[in-house]
Amino acid sequence: MTIRLVLADDHALILDGLEQLVHLAGDFEVVERCVSGDEALRAVGRHLPDVLVLDIRMPGLNGLEVLRELQRQGLETRVVILTAAIGEEELIEAMRLGVRGVVLKEMAPRLLVQCLRKVYAGEQWIERQSVRAALEKVMRREAGGREAASQLTPREIELVRMVADGLRNREIAERLGITEGTVKAHLHNIYKKLQLETRVAVRRYAEEKGLL
Image (cartoon, rainbow, N blue to C red; front, side):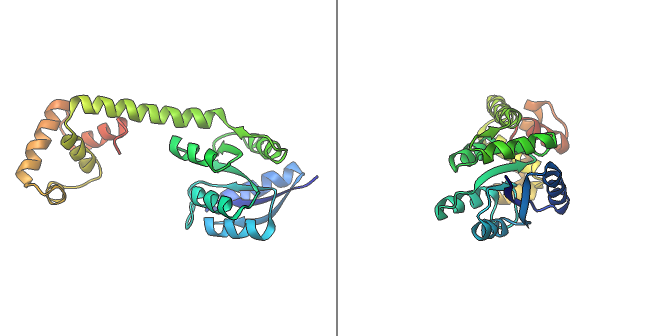
C-alpha cells in the first residue's frame, strides 16, 4: 500500500522536511511539491492524489480558497491542513469544507505521519492542541474586547487600534475626519483611563487585548 501525496507549502525547507519525513516512513509517495495554492489545485487535478498536505497561508489562492475550489470541482482528494497557527474561524471553515486532518507544525513529526495514515483510511484527525489553541485565542480576544469596551468608548477603541498600527496623529485625524486637537484630546483620555504614558504602551495594550 502506497499513499500518494501532494505537498503544498510556500517554504522550501518545510517541503524538504516533509518529503524526507514521509520517505523515511516508507509507505508514501510524493507525486508533486507545490509552493502556491494555485499550484496545489492544479497538482490535485493532474494527479488525483490520496491526500493533499496543505498550508493555510499560501501565495495566490490561500488554503481555504483551495478547499473551496476542490469542493466546487468535486475533487475527492482528502486534505490535511499543516499550519503554524489556525484561528477558530479558519478552523470552522476548513471543517465545513471537508478537511479531514489539522496538524500544527510545532507538533512532533510522527503525529503528522499518523494523521496521514488515519486520513487515508477514512478517519479524521484534528489535533486537540490546534483546536484548544484556536479557542483560547478567540476567548482571550473576546475577553480583552469586553474589558476594553468597559474602559473605552467605541471611538477610543478605534484610536487605540490606529495608534497600535503606527499611525501618527495627523494620519488619524485625516482618516476620521477630525482635527489633530481632537485626536490629542482622545489620546489624553485614553492614556488617563488606561494609566499608560506612551504609544508603545498603547500598542502593547492592543496586542494583549486582541484589538489588532
